[in-house]
Image 1 (spheres, rainbow over the protein chains, first blue to last red):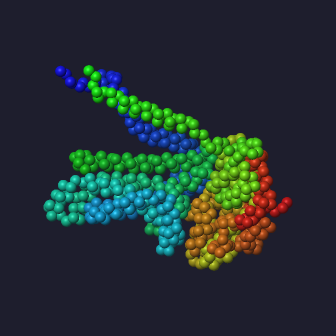
Image 2: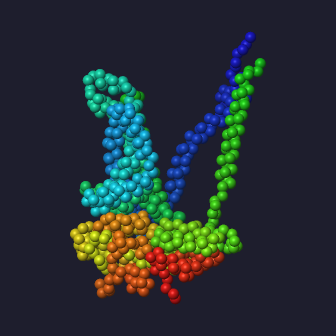
Image 3: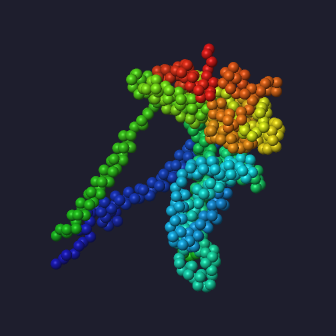
Length: 315
Length: 314
């Protein structure tokens, strides 16, 4: 009495593929749909890059590389030197990260390791709210409230690289905090237990065991923070003063106005005639931004890979 | 023997597949069936009366308040015509005219040679209409002791040759230069008439440390709160209660004149400029009617009420 249920009974009409195994064609449709979704992500990025190159490469038919890397940006008189814009973006991002990383790391450590549960329950949603504030609102707040404060501290004007960096730091904080917190959470309990067992204090455990163990996750958090900061547009447009000037080296450098690449594209894209040199140069700036974020992400994944290998496959 | 499990499985799979197919069809149909609400705005000029007509008006931020007031007032008289007004700067408006995406481009500066060439290469022949006059006011903080400046002094300040207020009769403090963005017609006008002192051979440009504010209001706000700032704005954007207006002399021999409606229309104020509207070719139909109304007493009355200078009768 065979009540045996064979494979073929449980499946819908069979199609055999090249390998000779039977697979239902509904499964194949779904598999291919999912494969398409995965490929589409790569496809979209490639298409964006191709588009940027196509629109931006025209700039280099007219401009030499030296002109492009010049120190004066004044497009209506044919001066297309992007050095002040690069310096502006890098300065604002660097200072923002220098402010945000210690702050974010400390917050994540506090939330993850030290805070009592009831406090965690309050602080975590608040940080999510900070993440949800639109950047233009933060920029407006910066322009209205923070800039006059910076001016009263003695800066010639409140619209400076430092103002931009300060608010940018607050904007990237939620990103850095959440990812760092996840990284700290992923550190196995055994590490902490072992450390405490050999007589280390809680702080020693956190500082010397947990944080180094979560190192690669923290690096990813910082990289993502950098990526977000360098791409931020409306905020820096409102508070950095938009002066295409390379500030003189020295501490006062932070309190000079700067102009970022992103603000330049936002402010000037509306006025360019399609296909003109200015149009192509703005796209060339876009290519540079794309490459910078690409390199940062690449370095981040490399770092993770390296750490994995070194620690023998365990984070 | 037929297994009872088989049938329900079949039914589920069919439902899933038909749902997917329906979804795909809906997405495809909506993608191809959506038409833009506006289509091409140019070409509206020949529509018969009684139909809704839209005029696209884009450009100068200096003109944008006046253009909005005109659009609203005109819509009350001619409800069939709706005018969409956008700012973005004279450069933006002119670029849109070259790209043939607007009916009327507002500009606070004249079109340049190469812009006219680009337009003609695109099949557009731009026609200039002067619609109002604007006096460009130089403003400083209320606490600033400086009352008057010559154009040469302004030029030296804005090119960075003079960097301290004490060199022009003020306090010992650094000069903070404010300007509009490069897409602004006001910026270009200031470059030509003040920084280059009206000399077309002059190639000076703004000092790199000039702060480029995204709007006219950005300039007035920064001037209000920064005691060392200097900026420029159209007379209609300036409030004498909150910003100090500087009297300007064309050169060392001339008198220092304050910008007012009277001094601008008489021509005694050195920084009075024409405000333009550009159309693609000679205007006809609704656009022509609108322009005629603007140049008439109603339109010019609105100009005066907003702090600009109406065209004199000629």
